[in-house]
Length: 220
Image (cartoon, rainbow, N blue to C red):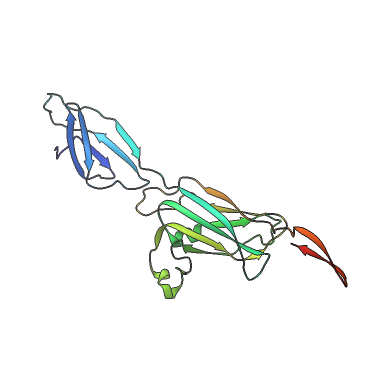
């Protein structure tokens, strides 16, 4: 191993190098690189190497680990106790852990004008503990630095209308992630919707006769 390789990194990357060919060194970091981070590498040395040459290369190279990314999947959750009422359930999955409190401050949910409720209230929970209010004092959430890769947004129930109600979930650029050098590279916007009220459908009409008259059965 080459303990004093002819390369330096910013931010620093601890590790060792090995010459895998006479003109090709390979650097082996001691641990994983930081996520969503831009590194610079400079090849420089005053040493004369076994080949008899010195390295004279003033160029600086840059490379970046994978950016923070987010994807969202959503669904309509019907209220079993109140027919005709529903809410949004949206699961946000990030490529790296993000801080729950920062995410809650950053996201915005805005509805179209024709919706039953334009500014829809919601709560934010961890996907593996959706029943726990992580921001409540009694859960310790207000005093802990909670970070996760997956969160669930659950809106209040609203009346369903005869048309689909559309909402836009926005996550701004710059949202940070744990140990990341840079945040979300650009604004992320996702279209969410509450399904329209299911129409009343008559499946069949069956007239029946009896000795006293008759009646009609209507099946919905």
